[in-house]
Length: 276
Image (cartoon, rainbow, N blue to C red; front, side, top):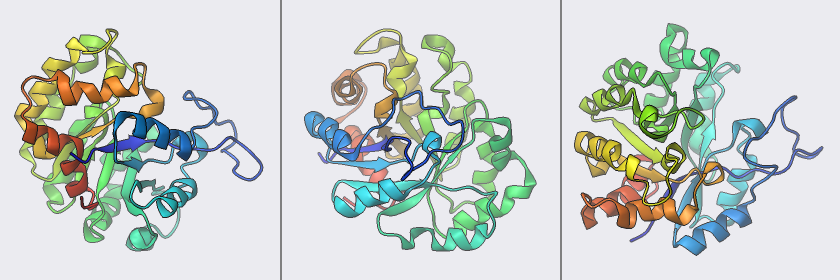
């Protein structure tokens, strides 16, 4: 089995050479290097990872793309895109011209950024990604239902819901899943997949994270394994990286071996055009 981790942040310290935005603060440490990511992956038997530039370091994709160029068999990138910068449509059409770039990750976790999904001013964004054949990873906790009309209007647009629609900084245990039905409603759209990332962060209990089994099984029943994508969100984890992976390799009795092949690599490769 070739395992792909669909979300790891890598970033360098705030410095004159790579300055962070004014006032930016990281709650995940001062830095996490490409070398640290490789060490974590190698220890757990993870073949590849999709790098997601972190917002606190400005969302700049340069360091992640540098890693993908140096290690093309290990890394590729879903880059940060700012819809409010000029020339958005042209930037979308040029997006994948950079070696190692797979698509876009949109962080929509504030009132201002959630407007990307709910304000008609940004209709061009979704149409442009569809036309440019760019897969989109979308983090919009509390508002996943807003993706339904977008998926319906843009049937060839691949939408991946980050963290199973949860808020990584929100509630834990049963309370973390209070709006799970909103996510399950998206299963009716065949162009929507779910990234099962950060999930141990929603459990106060250690491996095998029993509180997670029920929600994951409901997501699996709704979407099927071919639309489920494992990711660690390694630097946010409150439990060991290896235990996050073990949840899917050993801990969920309802998964078949074929299901695991899809969830742990096949689905990421297919949905993000990063062939195995």
